[in-house]
Structures are given as structure tokens and as C-alpha cells.
Image 1: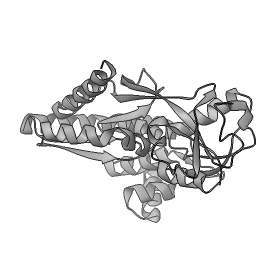
Image 2: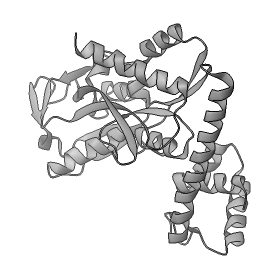
Image 3: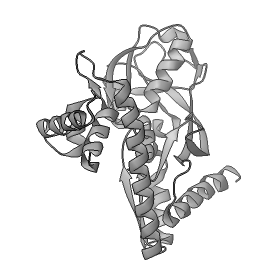
Image 4: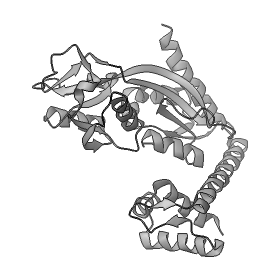
Length: 298
């Protein structure tokens, strides 16, 4: 067993797809499949159940996934600690940032941090909140911003800001002039929603289920501005953070002031518990925490 085999298997396990894992790793699918099969042959165990349409891990695969995450997290900690010793305050930070959150707050934050710490490089990794959590646990990123809630026993959490999701409709929609819309009244509507890798997908879906219906999702996207344009083209309704609603095509869309119940959009900075945190990352966590809390108090 070697690290490359574990790395390839872990990618497949996290994506539950050979094709998506091969794209993420930039290797061919046959090469990836062969490496995983070699690992299974070496262990004498089947790690991935390929007998059904939907790929899933076997019990042995789940055990290997858990221990592989620990191995790569430990290697990440070792490399980070050695880099800290060698470079002291110099370094880089891999920041996991869902696109909708980045568009709302972080360009100004990153610019100001860079002004104060020009020797520290921030590498942005844009992916949905659920993938941010997974990437943190494998050590492929250092810190992430997500929508709450997350597993408190796995992550250290610093709440940053409390906001709401707003209902966005086409100007011709029956609710375009409403002051408040019961969430249950949206049953049967065509939803335009963030993809499953995004926390907002689950928050919106779960809020609808609590009101007694499964939302009809007709379109999914990873980009808030594209979702806004889809609503402007009268292809459905959407829920978007209030911080981005002002940027939507105002002549074709309306933002409903309130829904009942409210769907919260509360952001937090998270990083894994029991993991080494580099000096540069600690500086960034302190800076982001101060940036948000100072504005909350003014």
C-alpha cells in the first residue's frame, strides 16, 4: 500500500464517482480505477460496491476512508509545522470559500489582509459548503467559511454573521408584490437552487420539508448570478442571501421582503479540531474574526 493509492481511493470515496474523482485529480479514469483495484487486491477486500447503479462504500471501504483521512491530515500537519519553522511568518493559506459567500464579503477582507501581510499568499478553493467540510478533514485546505450548522465535535467554529435567505421571483410572479409569503405556499413552484454540494441546497430543501413538501428542483447551479438570471428569465423562483439580492437584475426580478418561517443564512469560519494550525492561518482567523465582530459592534 502506498500513499498514492490511498490518495486516489480517498478521492473516489469522497466523490462517490470515478469520473468526478478523475477530473478532480487530473488523471484518466482507467488509471484511477486500476489504482483502486490494486489497493483492493493488496488488502484482499472490496472497498467499493460497484454492483448497483449508485456507487457506495463497503464497510471495509468506510474504515479505509476514515483512516486515510487521518493519514493525510497528519501529513498536512507535519508539512505545515515544518514550513512554519523554516519560513516563520511567511507562508500560504488555502481558504475554502463557497462562491456565494465570496461574492458577499471576502474580496475586501482578503485585500485588507494582503495589505497587512503581503508575505502571506491566500489560495482560494471555491467549492460548496459540504465539500469545504470534507476538504478540511482531509487537510487539502486550511480553513473554510460555511453556512451553519456544522458538526461541532469535528470543527472549531467562529460565528461571523447572521443573515437571511430572501425569496426572489420574476416581476410577473403572483408573489412579486407580496410583503410576506408562507413557505408552504411555494409547493409546486419551480425551484432554481444551488447544487447538492452546497449547504444552501440542504437548508432550503429541509426548510420546505419542515413545511410539509418536497421542493420541485428544476435547475441547479453553483453561481448565484446565473441563478438570478434564470429567475429574470422567468424559469422559476430562488432563495438567495440578502447580501447579493441588490446585485440582481432589478427590472426583471423582485425580492420578497420576508418568508414565514425565515430561512437563516448564518456564516462561520471553521477548521478541524486537533489539527496543527500554521502561524499564517492563525493570523488570518484572528483577522477575519476581528473584521466581522468590529462591524457588528459599530
